[in-house]
Structure formats: C-alpha cells, structure tokens
Image (cartoon, rainbow, N blue to C red; front, side, top):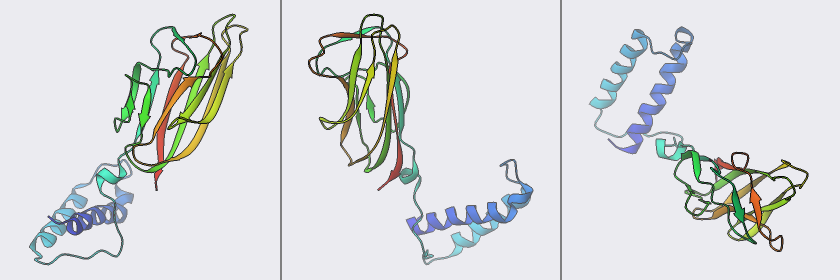
Length: 192
C-alpha cells in the first residue's frame, strides 16, 4: 500500500470517528462505525490508482512522542564539570536518554523542554548547570542549610544528534547529591 493510500485510510478513520463520534463518546467504535469503515476500506482497495491528498498527513513515526525522566538511585559525589549520570530511568520513549553517560541525544530536530531538580544535603550547597553540546543554557542552585532544592527549566531548539546533560559547576569542589530528589526530564514539544 502506498503512503498516499495509507494516509487516505488515516483520514477516513478520522472522518468516520468525527461523523459518528456523538454515538461513541467513550472512544469505543460502534458496530455501525466498523461496518462503514470496512465498506470504505473495500472501496479504496478496489481502486487501482492512487488517491491524492490535499495535505500531508504525518505517519505514526512522525508523531511518536519523545520523552524521558531519570533520577539518582543513591547519593552521588560529583567533581568540577562532572556530568550527572541519572541511573534510574523511569521513562525513555524514543530512547534519547543514555543512563551510562547521563546524556540526552535528540533523535529528531525540534523544540524541546528540559527540567532538572537538585537537592543538597546539610552543610553542602550544590550549583549545577544544564548544557547543550557543551554550552551552558541554564543554572540551578541549592543552598547548604539542609535539604534545600532548586529547579531549572529551559526550552531549546535541538538538531538531530544534539546532546543535553546536567553537570556540576566548575570550581565548586566535590559535592554530594541527595538520591531520589535529583532528577532530569525532557520531552519534545514540536518537530521543526
């Protein structure tokens, strides 16, 4: 089946759902909808020529979400400019996050959202930064008063293959990071 015919099937599914949507508010297809859809599929299957579409309809691969969320499993002491390797990966749709290095690599070009949270332990402040291909794009600080936390959020354009990670700021000396309350997350807002 050609992409144009596949796209036509997709549009027909949307049309059938729209036309009969009021009878199926719970998202389950009714027998009437299924029968109508089967007839449309038969009619399309009998056509020998391609059916042109006036618009481009994204394929499933083009609309697949990209998102990750990772945390620390134990207290981690980090040095100057050391990357944080968040080793407990809760979500990694699109496989962009690599826990071995703590880096997210953009699988597609697009506009991305990133956020990270840090928590200090008593008598130790923590100053972290988020970097894109080695250039700082955001900072975060947690004071030394005991279990202080800070969060930083950035939105940035990435090209396919660009990398984003969290690292300790230079000249701070080694600092411990509290487990569980240190996390790194990100997701694709839109392809560009």
